[in-house]
Image (cartoon, rainbow, N blue to C red):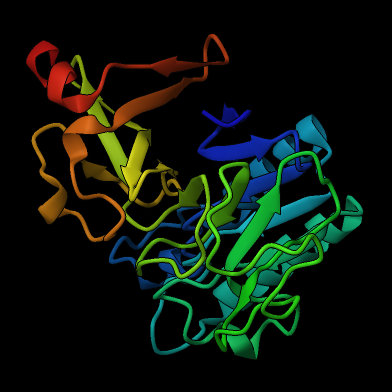
Length: 264
């Protein structure tokens, strides 16, 4: 397992100075049938500010589905996105986005770094290695600055991507979002991370819950991988749920689902 810290639906990679969030779904409040304000903008920016103050990352990666609407960009979504950008910049961190399937309209709001698969070498806080741009080309060419090829598997490498498509880059660990996992324990539904050692062609897979609290989450208790959307999850039973407990401020690791289901 990579060195990682779990907190408030996010992931911090201390060896790379990188904070990862997935599935903000900005603008979801504007499309909700609920007629009362849900506080989406304030909630997301307040929690992000807390994470930035806690970890002081040099880089923030939004791992896809930054926006909610496929076809337009409500004013509320544009304003929320602008606040996220300014908040990250105010902490002297670099913002990078790995677009998801909801992000067709993101180009109208964002002209910064947008990379389908972003590669991190643990221990290199400021280096981006062999990242695949949206046009399919490596940021550093066919060979990265350390001489590794795009297709050469590197066990010490982390690839951050949204998770709706199979990745082209090979790595030791894939960090993804997309499916909004949640688990019900003792009658309470909790957002959860999913960790599958060697789950995708021998590489570890770590799925994040949706950062937005407006996403209720997909309850995984009785699900099979075929009922989820990410192609990186082929055997859900081998994945371990991880729940961040706000009261103790600890990440609680549970057994693989194949074993844990009988206890639920």
